Image 1 (cartoon, helix red, strand yellow):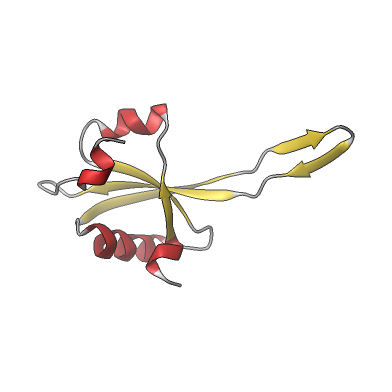
Image 2 (cartoon, helix red, strand yellow):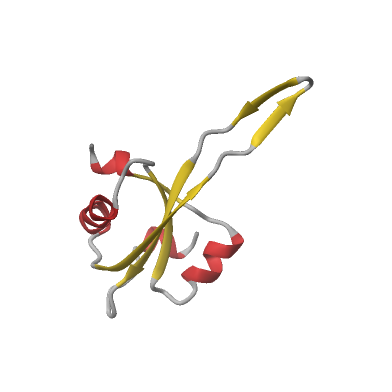
Length: 96
């Protein structure tokens, strides 16, 4: 799996913006079958920052309806990445 397939996008929500204020925690949407070791290596190679800790969680897709037809959005995975002490957050994520 390529590094860009593992890290899909940074999540920018109100909750993740509060976590980002300390300058150490970034939240990403990641591939559902990626493990913590793959996420760590992808972050360190793509962003150039050392990772201290990773927490992952699976968000289950919502059931959506269109009239009488019901479907389900796909499940997805997010990773809370904590950077090591002294590591700087990448510039393109600071303003987001």
